[in-house]
Image (cartoon, rainbow, N blue to C red):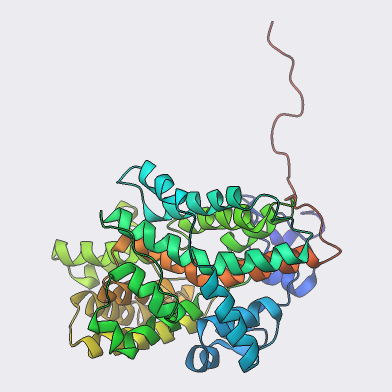
Length: 413
Ligand code: MLT
Protein backbone atom coordinates (compact mmCIF):
# COMPACT_ATOMS: atom_id res chain seq x y z
CA UNK A 1 0.00 0.00 0.00
CA UNK A 2 2.71 2.48 0.99
CA UNK A 3 4.86 1.33 -1.93
CA UNK A 4 2.08 2.16 -4.33
CA UNK A 5 1.30 5.57 -2.77
CA UNK A 6 4.44 6.57 -0.86
CA UNK A 7 3.18 10.11 -0.47
CA UNK A 8 0.41 8.93 1.80
CA UNK A 9 2.57 7.89 4.73
CA UNK A 10 4.95 10.12 6.66
CA UNK A 11 8.11 8.77 8.32
CA UNK A 12 6.20 8.10 11.52
CA UNK A 13 3.73 6.03 9.56
CA UNK A 14 1.00 8.64 9.98
CA UNK A 15 -0.84 9.95 6.93
CA UNK A 16 1.09 12.86 5.45
CA UNK A 17 -1.73 14.34 3.36
CA UNK A 18 -5.42 14.70 3.86
CA UNK A 19 -6.49 11.16 3.09
CA UNK A 20 -10.12 11.92 2.57
CA UNK A 21 -9.25 14.50 -0.11
CA UNK A 22 -6.90 12.04 -1.79
CA UNK A 23 -9.36 9.19 -1.77
CA UNK A 24 -12.23 11.39 -2.92
CA UNK A 25 -10.16 12.46 -5.91
CA UNK A 26 -8.67 9.12 -6.86
CA UNK A 27 -11.06 6.53 -5.55
CA UNK A 28 -8.15 4.73 -3.88
CA UNK A 29 -8.12 3.26 -0.42
CA UNK A 30 -5.18 3.97 1.86
CA UNK A 31 -3.95 3.11 5.32
CA UNK A 32 -6.31 5.14 7.35
CA UNK A 33 -5.87 5.53 11.10
CA UNK A 34 -9.13 5.61 12.97
CA UNK A 35 -11.25 4.56 9.99
CA UNK A 36 -11.17 8.10 8.68
CA UNK A 37 -11.64 7.25 5.04
CA UNK A 38 -15.02 8.83 4.43
CA UNK A 39 -15.01 8.32 0.67
CA UNK A 40 -15.27 4.57 1.09
CA UNK A 41 -19.04 4.93 1.13
CA UNK A 42 -21.13 6.35 -1.67
CA UNK A 43 -24.20 8.38 -0.86
CA UNK A 44 -26.61 10.69 -2.71
CA UNK A 45 -27.81 12.61 0.34
CA UNK A 46 -25.41 15.39 1.34
CA UNK A 47 -22.66 17.19 -0.53
CA UNK A 48 -19.83 18.99 1.26
CA UNK A 49 -16.96 20.94 -0.25
CA UNK A 50 -14.73 21.66 2.72
CA UNK A 51 -12.37 23.94 0.79
CA UNK A 52 -15.14 26.21 -0.41
CA UNK A 53 -17.29 25.88 2.71
CA UNK A 54 -20.27 24.47 0.80
CA UNK A 55 -22.97 22.22 2.24
CA UNK A 56 -25.98 20.99 0.27
CA UNK A 57 -28.74 18.55 1.12
CA UNK A 58 -29.90 16.68 -2.01
CA UNK A 59 -28.42 19.52 -4.05
CA UNK A 60 -30.13 22.39 -2.18
CA UNK A 61 -27.86 24.90 -0.40
CA UNK A 62 -28.12 24.74 3.38
CA UNK A 63 -28.55 28.53 3.54
CA UNK A 64 -31.76 28.35 1.46
CA UNK A 65 -33.20 25.41 3.36
CA UNK A 66 -32.43 27.01 6.72
CA UNK A 67 -34.23 30.18 5.61
CA UNK A 68 -37.27 28.81 3.79
CA UNK A 69 -38.00 25.30 5.07
CA UNK A 70 -39.23 23.60 8.21
CA UNK A 71 -37.45 20.78 10.04
CA UNK A 72 -39.98 18.22 8.79
CA UNK A 73 -39.76 19.46 5.22
CA UNK A 74 -35.99 19.01 5.26
CA UNK A 75 -36.40 15.62 6.96
CA UNK A 76 -38.64 14.53 4.08
CA UNK A 77 -36.12 15.88 1.57
CA UNK A 78 -33.26 13.93 3.15
CA UNK A 79 -35.25 10.72 3.51
CA UNK A 80 -37.17 10.67 0.22
CA UNK A 81 -34.87 12.76 -2.00
CA UNK A 82 -37.31 15.53 -3.04
CA UNK A 83 -38.94 18.48 -1.33
CA UNK A 84 -42.46 17.40 -0.32
CA UNK A 85 -45.62 18.82 -1.89
CA UNK A 86 -47.98 20.61 0.50
CA UNK A 87 -50.17 17.53 0.88
CA UNK A 88 -47.21 15.16 1.34
CA UNK A 89 -45.84 17.39 4.08
CA UNK A 90 -49.24 17.68 5.79
CA UNK A 91 -49.66 13.90 5.77
CA UNK A 92 -46.12 13.35 7.10
CA UNK A 93 -46.67 15.90 9.85
CA UNK A 94 -50.03 14.29 10.81
CA UNK A 95 -48.55 10.84 11.00
CA UNK A 96 -45.77 12.08 13.25
CA UNK A 97 -48.27 13.83 15.53
CA UNK A 98 -50.18 10.52 15.87
CA UNK A 99 -47.10 8.63 17.07
CA UNK A 100 -45.66 10.88 19.77
CA UNK A 101 -46.89 8.91 22.79
CA UNK A 102 -44.43 6.60 24.53
CA UNK A 103 -45.53 3.39 26.19
CA UNK A 104 -46.43 4.16 29.82
CA UNK A 105 -44.02 1.45 31.00
CA UNK A 106 -41.15 3.53 29.70
CA UNK A 107 -41.77 5.88 32.63
CA UNK A 108 -40.60 3.10 34.96
CA UNK A 109 -37.60 2.63 32.71
CA UNK A 110 -36.71 6.31 33.06
CA UNK A 111 -37.19 6.33 36.82
CA UNK A 112 -34.95 3.27 37.22
CA UNK A 113 -31.97 5.23 35.86
CA UNK A 114 -29.86 7.22 38.33
CA UNK A 115 -30.88 10.88 38.81
CA UNK A 116 -27.36 11.94 37.88
CA UNK A 117 -27.55 10.26 34.44
CA UNK A 118 -26.40 12.40 31.54
CA UNK A 119 -29.38 13.06 29.21
CA UNK A 120 -27.40 11.64 26.26
CA UNK A 121 -27.02 8.30 28.08
CA UNK A 122 -30.74 8.35 28.87
CA UNK A 123 -31.52 9.15 25.23
CA UNK A 124 -29.48 6.27 23.81
CA UNK A 125 -30.71 3.78 26.41
CA UNK A 126 -34.38 4.69 25.86
CA UNK A 127 -33.99 4.60 22.07
CA UNK A 128 -32.53 1.10 22.27
CA UNK A 129 -35.39 0.18 24.63
CA UNK A 130 -37.95 1.26 22.00
CA UNK A 131 -36.89 -1.76 20.00
CA UNK A 132 -38.38 -4.03 22.66
CA UNK A 133 -41.85 -2.53 22.10
CA UNK A 134 -41.85 -3.09 18.36
CA UNK A 135 -40.47 -6.58 18.00
CA UNK A 136 -42.24 -8.23 15.09
CA UNK A 137 -42.63 -4.82 13.45
CA UNK A 138 -39.04 -3.89 12.81
CA UNK A 139 -37.79 -6.04 9.98
CA UNK A 140 -35.37 -3.88 7.93
CA UNK A 141 -36.36 -5.71 4.74
CA UNK A 142 -40.08 -4.95 5.19
CA UNK A 143 -40.84 -1.51 3.65
CA UNK A 144 -43.98 -1.06 5.79
CA UNK A 145 -42.01 -1.62 8.98
CA UNK A 146 -39.30 0.75 7.78
CA UNK A 147 -41.87 3.50 7.03
CA UNK A 148 -43.64 3.01 10.34
CA UNK A 149 -40.45 3.07 12.36
CA UNK A 150 -39.18 6.13 10.49
CA UNK A 151 -42.31 7.93 11.71
CA UNK A 152 -42.03 6.44 15.19
CA UNK A 153 -38.45 7.59 15.56
CA UNK A 154 -39.21 11.14 14.37
CA UNK A 155 -42.24 11.34 16.67
CA UNK A 156 -40.76 9.75 19.78
CA UNK A 157 -37.14 10.92 19.94
CA UNK A 158 -38.10 14.51 20.89
CA UNK A 159 -40.39 13.15 23.62
CA UNK A 160 -37.63 10.91 24.98
CA UNK A 161 -35.26 13.89 24.82
CA UNK A 162 -37.66 16.05 26.82
CA UNK A 163 -38.09 13.25 29.39
CA UNK A 164 -34.30 13.01 29.67
CA UNK A 165 -34.25 16.76 30.31
CA UNK A 166 -37.02 16.62 32.91
CA UNK A 167 -35.36 13.72 34.65
CA UNK A 168 -32.02 15.54 34.78
CA UNK A 169 -33.63 18.50 36.57
CA UNK A 170 -35.98 16.41 38.73
CA UNK A 171 -39.24 17.65 37.16
CA UNK A 172 -42.42 15.81 36.17
CA UNK A 173 -42.75 14.46 32.64
CA UNK A 174 -45.30 16.20 30.45
CA UNK A 175 -47.45 14.69 27.72
CA UNK A 176 -47.07 15.79 24.11
CA UNK A 177 -49.65 18.22 22.79
CA UNK A 178 -50.28 17.05 19.26
CA UNK A 179 -52.17 20.18 18.29
CA UNK A 180 -48.83 21.98 18.28
CA UNK A 181 -46.15 22.06 15.61
CA UNK A 182 -43.13 19.76 15.95
CA UNK A 183 -40.87 22.46 17.38
CA UNK A 184 -43.45 24.10 19.66
CA UNK A 185 -44.53 20.74 21.01
CA UNK A 186 -40.91 19.99 21.83
CA UNK A 187 -40.46 23.34 23.57
CA UNK A 188 -43.63 22.77 25.56
CA UNK A 189 -42.49 19.29 26.62
CA UNK A 190 -39.29 20.84 27.93
CA UNK A 191 -40.56 24.03 29.50
CA UNK A 192 -44.09 23.26 30.54
CA UNK A 193 -47.12 25.37 29.98
CA UNK A 194 -45.49 27.55 27.60
CA UNK A 195 -44.46 30.36 28.38
CA UNK A 196 -45.59 33.41 26.61
CA UNK A 197 -41.98 33.36 25.53
CA UNK A 198 -42.53 30.76 22.87
CA UNK A 199 -46.23 31.17 22.28
CA UNK A 200 -46.03 34.76 21.37
CA UNK A 201 -42.48 34.66 20.21
CA UNK A 202 -42.03 32.98 16.87
CA UNK A 203 -38.43 34.18 16.77
CA UNK A 204 -37.51 31.59 19.40
CA UNK A 205 -39.35 28.73 17.71
CA UNK A 206 -37.90 29.67 14.36
CA UNK A 207 -34.38 29.89 15.82
CA UNK A 208 -34.66 26.36 17.24
CA UNK A 209 -36.12 25.07 13.98
CA UNK A 210 -33.24 26.64 12.08
CA UNK A 211 -30.66 25.07 14.39
CA UNK A 212 -32.29 21.66 13.99
CA UNK A 213 -32.26 22.04 10.18
CA UNK A 214 -28.57 22.98 10.22
CA UNK A 215 -27.82 19.75 12.08
CA UNK A 216 -29.98 17.41 9.99
CA UNK A 217 -27.18 15.77 8.05
CA UNK A 218 -23.44 16.01 7.47
CA UNK A 219 -22.51 13.00 5.33
CA UNK A 220 -20.14 10.35 6.76
CA UNK A 221 -19.33 11.80 10.18
CA UNK A 222 -18.66 9.46 13.13
CA UNK A 223 -22.28 8.99 14.21
CA UNK A 224 -23.73 8.59 10.71
CA UNK A 225 -21.15 6.02 9.70
CA UNK A 226 -21.88 4.24 12.99
CA UNK A 227 -25.58 4.12 12.09
CA UNK A 228 -24.69 2.75 8.66
CA UNK A 229 -22.22 0.21 10.03
CA UNK A 230 -24.62 -1.08 12.68
CA UNK A 231 -27.48 -1.04 10.15
CA UNK A 232 -25.38 -3.02 7.67
CA UNK A 233 -25.61 -6.00 10.03
CA UNK A 234 -29.40 -6.03 9.60
CA UNK A 235 -30.04 -4.27 12.93
CA UNK A 236 -33.28 -2.28 13.04
CA UNK A 237 -33.63 1.53 13.10
CA UNK A 238 -33.95 1.75 16.91
CA UNK A 239 -30.74 -0.19 17.58
CA UNK A 240 -28.81 1.56 14.79
CA UNK A 241 -29.87 5.04 15.89
CA UNK A 242 -29.15 4.30 19.51
CA UNK A 243 -25.60 3.40 18.41
CA UNK A 244 -25.40 6.69 16.48
CA UNK A 245 -26.47 8.61 19.60
CA UNK A 246 -23.62 6.99 21.53
CA UNK A 247 -21.14 7.99 18.82
CA UNK A 248 -22.47 11.55 18.87
CA UNK A 249 -22.06 11.83 22.64
CA UNK A 250 -18.25 12.26 22.59
CA UNK A 251 -16.72 15.76 23.02
CA UNK A 252 -14.97 15.46 19.66
CA UNK A 253 -18.34 15.06 17.92
CA UNK A 254 -21.73 16.31 19.15
CA UNK A 255 -20.47 16.75 22.71
CA UNK A 256 -18.41 19.70 21.47
CA UNK A 257 -21.29 22.19 21.85
CA UNK A 258 -21.39 21.41 25.58
CA UNK A 259 -17.57 21.56 25.76
CA UNK A 260 -17.56 25.03 24.11
CA UNK A 261 -19.86 26.49 26.73
CA UNK A 262 -17.81 24.90 29.52
CA UNK A 263 -14.67 26.40 27.97
CA UNK A 264 -16.21 29.89 27.69
CA UNK A 265 -17.42 29.67 31.29
CA UNK A 266 -13.93 28.69 32.45
CA UNK A 267 -12.34 31.62 30.60
CA UNK A 268 -14.86 34.02 32.13
CA UNK A 269 -14.41 32.64 35.64
CA UNK A 270 -10.61 32.57 35.47
CA UNK A 271 -10.38 36.27 34.65
CA UNK A 272 -7.70 35.35 32.10
CA UNK A 273 -7.66 37.48 28.95
CA UNK A 274 -8.89 35.89 25.73
CA UNK A 275 -5.52 36.70 24.13
CA UNK A 276 -3.72 34.79 26.88
CA UNK A 277 -6.08 31.84 26.47
CA UNK A 278 -5.36 31.77 22.73
CA UNK A 279 -1.60 31.79 23.46
CA UNK A 280 -2.05 28.81 25.76
CA UNK A 281 -3.97 26.98 23.02
CA UNK A 282 -1.15 27.67 20.53
CA UNK A 283 1.53 26.52 22.99
CA UNK A 284 -0.58 23.47 23.90
CA UNK A 285 -0.13 24.46 27.56
CA UNK A 286 -1.89 22.09 30.00
CA UNK A 287 -3.47 20.34 27.03
CA UNK A 288 -5.85 23.30 26.63
CA UNK A 289 -7.90 23.18 23.41
CA UNK A 290 -10.01 25.67 21.52
CA UNK A 291 -13.25 23.72 21.43
CA UNK A 292 -15.67 24.31 18.53
CA UNK A 293 -12.88 25.37 16.21
CA UNK A 294 -11.54 23.46 13.21
CA UNK A 295 -13.12 20.60 11.31
CA UNK A 296 -11.81 17.52 9.57
CA UNK A 297 -13.49 18.53 6.32
CA UNK A 298 -13.89 22.32 6.42
CA UNK A 299 -10.77 24.29 5.58
CA UNK A 300 -12.97 27.34 5.24
CA UNK A 301 -15.73 28.87 7.36
CA UNK A 302 -18.30 26.19 8.21
CA UNK A 303 -21.44 27.54 6.48
CA UNK A 304 -23.52 26.31 9.40
CA UNK A 305 -21.46 28.32 11.91
CA UNK A 306 -22.17 31.55 10.02
CA UNK A 307 -25.92 30.93 10.21
CA UNK A 308 -25.77 29.89 13.86
CA UNK A 309 -23.87 33.06 14.70
CA UNK A 310 -26.61 35.16 13.04
CA UNK A 311 -29.26 33.28 15.04
CA UNK A 312 -27.36 33.83 18.29
CA UNK A 313 -27.48 37.59 17.71
CA UNK A 314 -31.17 37.45 16.75
CA UNK A 315 -32.25 35.41 19.77
CA UNK A 316 -30.35 37.49 22.29
CA UNK A 317 -31.64 40.70 20.71
CA UNK A 318 -35.19 39.34 20.83
CA UNK A 319 -34.87 38.40 24.49
CA UNK A 320 -33.24 41.70 25.28
CA UNK A 321 -30.41 39.94 27.11
CA UNK A 322 -26.68 40.28 26.83
CA UNK A 323 -24.67 37.15 27.35
CA UNK A 324 -21.02 37.79 28.18
CA UNK A 325 -20.28 34.30 26.85
CA UNK A 326 -21.42 35.36 23.36
CA UNK A 327 -19.13 38.40 23.56
CA UNK A 328 -16.31 36.11 24.68
CA UNK A 329 -16.96 33.71 21.81
CA UNK A 330 -16.88 36.56 19.29
CA UNK A 331 -13.67 37.96 20.77
CA UNK A 332 -12.12 34.51 20.63
CA UNK A 333 -13.13 34.15 16.99
CA UNK A 334 -11.75 37.59 16.06
CA UNK A 335 -8.42 36.95 17.73
CA UNK A 336 -8.08 33.46 16.26
CA UNK A 337 -9.04 34.45 12.72
CA UNK A 338 -6.45 37.22 12.71
CA UNK A 339 -3.69 35.02 14.06
CA UNK A 340 -1.23 33.31 11.68
CA UNK A 341 -1.30 30.12 13.70
CA UNK A 342 -5.01 29.61 12.97
CA UNK A 343 -4.81 31.10 9.48
CA UNK A 344 -2.05 28.73 8.39
CA UNK A 345 -3.90 25.76 9.79
CA UNK A 346 -7.16 26.99 8.27
CA UNK A 347 -9.00 26.67 11.55
CA UNK A 348 -12.44 28.31 11.63
CA UNK A 349 -15.40 28.12 14.01
CA UNK A 350 -17.51 25.04 13.36
CA UNK A 351 -21.20 24.36 13.93
CA UNK A 352 -20.68 23.80 17.67
CA UNK A 353 -19.06 27.16 18.39
CA UNK A 354 -22.18 29.34 18.81
CA UNK A 355 -25.01 26.84 19.28
CA UNK A 356 -24.61 26.54 23.06
CA UNK A 357 -25.09 30.27 23.56
CA UNK A 358 -28.51 30.05 21.87
CA UNK A 359 -29.60 26.90 23.68
CA UNK A 360 -28.59 28.51 26.96
CA UNK A 361 -30.61 31.64 26.16
CA UNK A 362 -33.60 29.40 25.42
CA UNK A 363 -33.30 27.87 28.89
CA UNK A 364 -31.82 24.45 28.08
CA UNK A 365 -29.28 23.17 30.60
CA UNK A 366 -25.80 22.58 29.17
CA UNK A 367 -26.19 18.81 29.40
CA UNK A 368 -29.07 18.99 26.92
CA UNK A 369 -27.05 20.60 24.13
CA UNK A 370 -25.85 17.37 22.55
CA UNK A 371 -29.33 15.90 22.87
CA UNK A 372 -30.56 18.78 20.71
CA UNK A 373 -27.88 17.91 18.16
CA UNK A 374 -29.22 14.33 18.15
CA UNK A 375 -32.79 15.48 17.42
CA UNK A 376 -31.41 17.61 14.61
CA UNK A 377 -29.36 14.74 13.19
CA UNK A 378 -32.11 12.11 13.36
CA UNK A 379 -33.46 12.62 9.79
CA UNK A 380 -29.93 12.27 8.40
CA UNK A 381 -29.38 9.04 10.32
CA UNK A 382 -32.70 7.69 9.09
CA UNK A 383 -31.94 8.71 5.50
CA UNK A 384 -28.51 7.04 5.58
CA UNK A 385 -29.85 3.89 7.20
CA UNK A 386 -32.52 3.60 4.49
CA UNK A 387 -30.15 4.44 1.65
CA UNK A 388 -27.76 1.76 2.85
CA UNK A 389 -30.52 -0.83 3.35
CA UNK A 390 -32.04 -0.32 -0.09
CA UNK A 391 -28.75 -0.41 -2.00
CA UNK A 392 -28.45 -3.94 -3.40
CA UNK A 393 -24.66 -3.60 -3.26
CA UNK A 394 -24.61 -3.13 0.52
CA UNK A 395 -22.73 -5.78 2.41
CA UNK A 396 -22.07 -6.06 6.11
CA UNK A 397 -19.51 -3.37 7.00
CA UNK A 398 -16.02 -4.46 7.89
CA UNK A 399 -13.25 -1.85 8.28
CA UNK A 400 -9.94 -2.87 6.77
CA UNK A 401 -7.16 -3.72 9.23
CA UNK A 402 -3.40 -3.57 8.85
CA UNK A 403 -1.99 -6.04 11.36
CA UNK A 404 0.96 -4.51 13.27
CA UNK A 405 1.49 -7.17 16.00
CA UNK A 406 3.96 -10.04 16.35
CA UNK A 407 3.87 -12.43 13.38
CA UNK A 408 4.04 -15.51 15.58
CA UNK A 409 5.16 -16.39 19.12
CA UNK A 410 5.67 -19.60 21.04
CA UNK A 411 3.63 -20.00 24.19
CA UNK A 412 6.09 -19.64 27.16
CA UNK A 413 6.97 -22.94 28.84
C1 MLT B 1 -21.21 16.98 12.12
O1 MLT B 1 -22.06 17.82 11.82
O2 MLT B 1 -21.47 15.75 12.16
C2 MLT B 1 -19.88 17.44 12.55
O3 MLT B 1 -19.51 18.63 11.93
C3 MLT B 1 -18.81 16.37 12.47
C4 MLT B 1 -18.43 15.92 11.10
O4 MLT B 1 -19.05 16.23 10.12
O5 MLT B 1 -17.44 15.17 11.01
